[in-house]
Length: 157
Length: 117
Image (cartoon, rainbow over all chains, first blue to last red; front, side, top):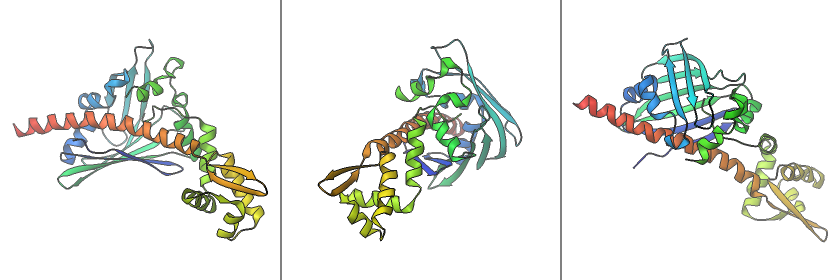
């Protein structure tokens, strides 16, 4: 039985996702910060998209870059940013710089009842930025061809 | 890199603006218990009729409340459509994360097995 994922719009600028995992924090952290492991779970198979490459310079100030492909397009699209804080195995903070109004994502890993509680917190620079991010993938710098991908990713789940 | 869903921005905006006011949130809560006339709402929230009409107008604009005039009485009820849309956006976003995290479960199980060997 899988643990329940919850999402809450905590305020006009914040989204919070929570989930428990049956394992110690250091393993959850490892799966989040090792590119070969990260590539195994970040993109749902049902989306049809694939993660073509994933570079992670896991250290404070280090950068990351994810490149996605989708059968509906020859082009790839990239997501990138910087790690603001890397504190194994309890905290990871990164920027989302593919859009000017990108969020800052903070993930905490806390051991609880023999498992690990993951809380992912996204803070946007403004209310408008979060509304925009919710509104469309076009604001995240995706190519025209990929405009529909966001829809695909969720409707095909 | 977390967002892979679509939504109509203007609606979203209007709804959250409407919900930013405590009186309007109270009105929604009240209407959740049952329909009410503007007069009843004004009494309940100790406001003038004009003041309450304004609040209801904002909620109506956002699609959160629907009103109907019968004779001289305007009755208000919840307009669920846009609330449902917002809930639907959040639910799609949640499903994306749930799918990711189910896959992450598998990765963690593998790591645990490797460690115990």
